[in-house]
Image 1 (tube, rainbow over the protein chains, first blue to last red):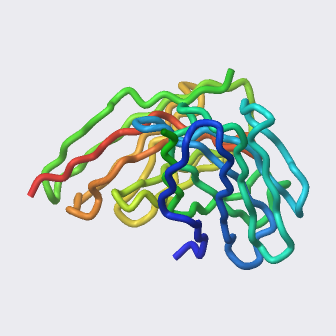
Image 2: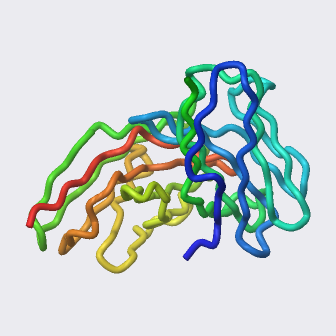
Length: 115
Length: 112
């Protein structure tokens, strides 16, 4: 059992709206990473937060932003939603993102549909 | 660019038989980590096995083992004594640290 939870399970939004996805990391894990998984594809790295600071970012525009809180929870915010944002969004928590050997443990994901 | 390639979109195996899933990757790094994750219909990615590039010994976890060929940049997963519960999408992932780079996955079907 990984202990990583995400909410909501499913979400439907319309183009142009804003959305907030939530993640609760495993206790003791100070690093959270977010991934976007389009249908039929592998997850793509969005960004990582370590101790409430952004620690790295993938090839995603600034309308994708995040927050990490001291209580092991985190958020992914997406502004000005586009149809291509429809995907499964996964968060992954890990013990220490500064360690190369860090193993990430994934939550069950939030399925976002943009109409 | 660092990439991960899984050339088998779908594989089938008879229950109790052995199957091997292929993965190749491209990197100029010498120190990195490789992973196999399983994603069942529940969508949760579950860690199957992990390999450190500096270790020559192949990782093993119960019925799961890898064949890690660093020079060839190959990292295949062998599942022995396949069970119905092994049916899922399997993703190979590479990490130099920080982010994971995933392949496109292999769907494994287990036939009773």
